[in-house]
Length: 254
Image 1: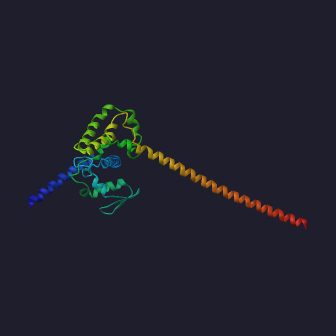
Image 2: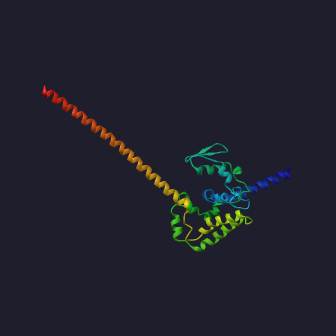
């Protein structure tokens, strides 16, 4: 019995040390960006090709270090974040992250989850697809000083992802490989790395058009109402003046 307890403590200690080392090197904010891009661009490709994300694929949510961490989060509003485990509320997501790391580390992280999604940010182009969240104007200098040789390792990483995520034994797997290669690998060059997909280009333009239309329509309605009120007031004033004038003429005739 004592031997079992000692073994359990040793395993728990090793797990805790390993988790701390991995978490220290894995950015939660960039992992969040990578996860968002996977949900928006990559996982829909699997659905389109009718292929399940297999166990070998590093993008499988089962391997995501922060997967349980994210599941514990309940966003009520931009300034209200709730811990699903204990019910505490926080004003910022950053405060929630610190709370999970300080209070619920044993529940939030597992030694079986070893993939840090932030290590795939270069491949997923986090700085390009999510610049307003974490990178700001840094992408301008990255594009201006682009070195073609810097894409060699990322290209190898992309091919490794395709080999692990897309099987080659059926037509669906072959189709998925082509989709992943065109979505991810084909952008790994100085000429194409900063090109946005259609889904990221058309939406802002449409939003701007709708906003301009709504503002213009609102201004037209506003000034139309003012014009109508002024017209009614002017008509009433004329009617009143005419009435007074007629009354004066009537008295003068007498």
